[in-house]
Length: 130
Image (cartoon, rainbow, N blue to C red; front, side, top):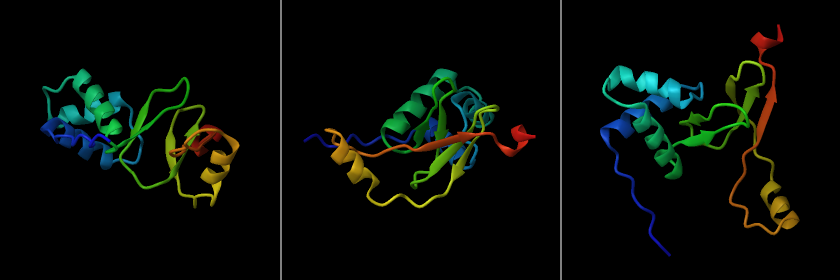
């Protein structure tokens, strides 16, 4: 079994991680790029994209996406769920207790070695409902 590769924390990665962890808005790469550029004016969009994907692959952040919506990122690693407004695209955390035995049920119903799951909700936010 291979050892996991330790990810070097470059200045760019540290700033991107700090920016994503200080907001609860689940920003897109474009939004993070604008925030990071205020601190690192010479950073490129490609560097932000590449580092977001690398950090997600190494478990430092979460990658969120819905079909037809821009990919968003989350700096909160504790288990939680999300709700998406189908009109404006706003994503918000929903704190619910995990359903006991859910993964075991999925494992029994499939032939997969289930590693985890993502459960998301959708609807209209209070602003779009009005």
